[in-house]
Figure 1: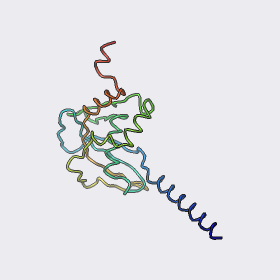
Figure 2: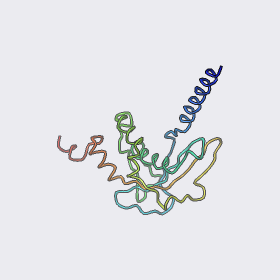
Figure 3: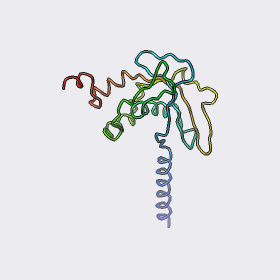
Figure 4: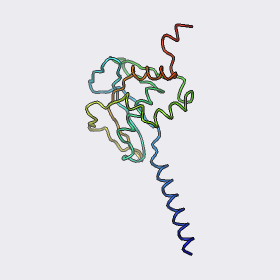
Length: 169
C-alpha cells in the first residue's frame, strides 16, 4: 500500500511541476509604438514603447518586455503614425521567424537579445504603463534598441545579407 501511495505522490508531483512550467511560458503577444515622450535616440538606436500582454501581471517582467521589443524590430518593424524624427522602420528580417527558426530559438532562449536592448529612464514605469483590460494585463516599457549592432550581429551570423553581398552579385 505504501508503494502505491509513494508512486501516486511522485506522479502527482511531476504533473504539477510540468503544468507550472507550461503556465510560466509567456508568448510573443505585444505591440510596438513610438514613444509619446520626447526622447532623443542616439544614432543607430530606436527608442519606442513596447506593450506586452498576458493573463498574469507578474509574468510580464521587464525582461519579457525587452525580449518582445527585439522580437518586434526583427519581425514586425515599427510603424510611425506620423512620420517624425524616427519615421517608419521596416522589419530587420522580413522573411520572418520561420526562415531561421533554429537560430532565433537559440537567440531568444540564451538571452543573447539582451545585449541589444536597454530600458530608458532606468526602467521606471509611468502612470498608465500597467493596465488591466478585461481578463488581460497590458504592460508598457520605454526601451531603446541598438539596431546597428543587432544588424551587424545578424549579418555576421549569416541571417541577413549585408550591403556588400547585395552589390557583389
